[in-house]
Every structure is written in C-alpha cells, then in structure tokens.
Length: 154
Image (cartoon, rainbow, N blue to C red; front, side):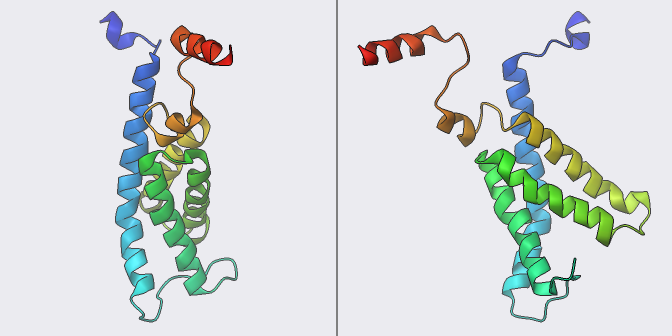
C-alpha cells in the first residue's frame, strides 16, 4: 500500500510517463491532422474556417503543419518544446474561435490536448527521446562519463 501512495517518483518512471504522454497524444492528433492534409492536397476547394483574417487555405495549411508535422516531431521526441508551441496555439484557436459557442462537451477534447501539450512544454520529452540523445549528457552523478571526458582532455 505504501508503494501506491508514494509521491516520490523515480526519474525512470517520469521518463516513461513522458514517453507515453508524448507518443500517445501525437498519435491521437495525427488522426485529426492526416484528414486535413488529404483535404489540403486533394485540389478540391478548401472547406475550412478562415481564422484571424487569413484565407481558408492558409488556416488549413497552418493546422496541417501543427497537427501533422509537429505531431511527427513529438512522436520522435525531437524539438519537443518547440513542436508543442504550434500545437498549443492550434488548440487555443480551436477553443476560442472554432468551438467558443459550443457546449463544454464539444470543447473538452481541445482542452485535453492543450493540457498534455502544456505538460510537455514544461516537462520536455524525457530520457526516451531524440532530444535526450542529442543533448549528449547522462544523468548527473554518472562518473564514468566524467572520467572518460577527463581522460580525453589529458
């Protein structure tokens, strides 16, 4: 019972939680973005709401960029904090402009996406990501890496 109520999370548990959140939310968003990408590439007249004075085509293009391209970056854990910024903006626009007059039940999904994107903005991608590999650092206190670096400097 103590283990269930323990609030001291380990680093690996946090990293696994970030991996699940990051890949799950990216995969779910792709189910919204891929149909928009197909609509954009179809050549048919664009049926998408123009937002903030932009044309329907530009609004759709920006939504596709966020929902497809940025979601792919999230799946890989590459530039995670930068990738969630367009997704956050897209969800805020969906809430403020597209679903503003809708009941909460219709807005709830955008709020849920927004919440996870905000967590990823603040927490980052975690250890199981390309971001972590490119960082080139291991966990603090890993003395074998420090010894290797010191040996190379001599």
